Length: 156
Length: 199
Image (cartoon, rainbow over all chains, first blue to last red; front, side):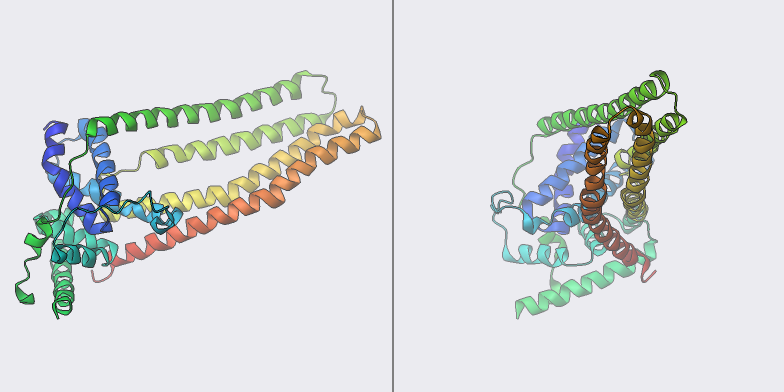
């Protein structure tokens, strides 16, 4: 699979996963771009040992986790206003609320639920995260319960 | 209604601006990689050149005193120890395996931060001690040829600078960086715990 094809196919998916992690359009775009730079650099060595999607989602997840280092060095709230532009595209309030709720979860839960909502099979999520499939199933169930509760309160 | 919230369809409704032009970004990433490589080569060359000058000065120019030789060796050791420690970090810093699983990747990040923290705390001190003692011994021979006045000027200037760097600038920098390392390590350990809990 050539890079351009991968880029076109996976950009939206990777972007949404990054959005689930940080809930900030510009920041998510940055992480997604970093992900594809890594994909581009590592593609010649990719041996199809795993599905290309699983491989890309792994890289994206790790780039998301890397934000922990950056946040500690330079919290985003410290950035000047003009740097973090807030022109967000029109999005339904419910959609915005979902992404907000996900971004408030613990870091690994954000990744797990984002991958689940992106229709990645739980066996693949288990490989990406490094946990057992049973564990992932339990975690997904609990996260969905949490989200449902938040939506119930939101609708009241 | 909440029971029927279709998270998947909401998830897919996330608006996406436009797909950025990746070619420009890749070109930029390539340029950045080259710049970083040159910086690394330059730093190594600078340290090696300093070492070469010290070797030349210590072993070829009228070096009657043993203290000059010991001083030379200590200063070279300071450079080499820092170079080795610094260069050992390169593969870890630049070749983290982004294709690893979340759990493996978190372990990698933790190990990097711990090593950086070690480099920051321990290596800087080793470097300063070796360099100061080396410079002191190295200067003894020259001092015997100088008048008392120039001796005082020389030692106050050289060791004054070293003292400011060691006792004032270095602790400030080290302390600030250490806080940053500790924060990151603490956060990474907390995230690691999230994975290990409920297993």
